[in-house]
Amino acid sequence: MSGRRSLFGVELDPLTMDETVQRCLAAVRDGRQLEIGVVNAAKLVNMRRDPRLARAVAGCDLVLADGQAVVWAGRMLRAPLPERVAGIDLFLRLLAEAESAGMSVYFLGARQEVLEEMLRRVAGRFPRLKVAGSRNGYFDDAQQEAIADGIARSGAQMLFLGMTSPKKEIFTAAYGARTGARVVHGVGGSFDILAGVTRRAPGSWQRWGFEWLYRALQEPRRLGRRYLTTNAAFVLMTAREFIRLNPSTAPANRSH
Image 1: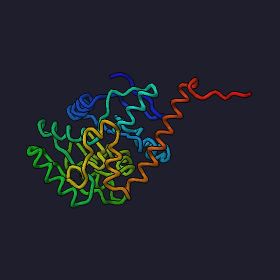
Image 2 (image 1 turned 180 degrees about the vertical axis):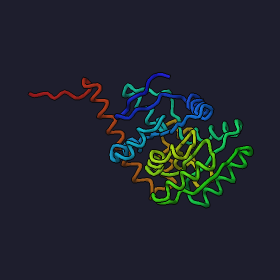
Image 3 (image 1 turned 60 degrees about the vertical axis):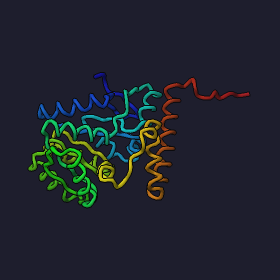
Image 4 (image 1 turned 90 degrees about the vertical axis):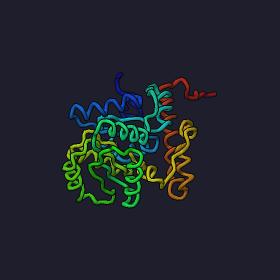
């Protein structure tokens, strides 16, 4: 693997999906912990506004480009990344690998009814998967230590956190090591998708970088304004960085 790529001051790992999966399996086999962070356009914008989130992501062992816009920005800004490694796709790959290798998993996140429906569907899709335990994602900060200890007692080798940012990153940074899980992967809204609560964008929307728009159309009141403002901020960030790297492209300031 070549060295990390620096994008907006964030260090990203230039890995393909296959390479990432192999790194995760090797961590379980070797008894090493691997905390995975994923970033999309919105999270890169929010990391500039939230130092705690930025520190939590920077502390991850692997930081991957979850959004197509991040891959495109990397190409423009001399920080090329081989491909998008979407958190939900990595999640599904790791579940399949865990099932075939006999590795145990723990699910932490979502509302209780969503978690139960996801577990039912996961059992149908991966019938031999060893589920060491699960818990919904509704807890306060005072409960985090006890939850981490419970995960450690379960013996789970992979931990998947179906929680929003920055909650999942902050939990991972503070208690990821305490859980004893070898792979710790924050999968955001993936539990809702696997449970059938929300729909994932079709492949063509994903390839064109419009997955955010598909989600916003499903929940316009909650997500519409948020996505528009963060995406506009990301475009502005990218343009400023492009001009900084390519000063000759900036318009000349002529005096007459």
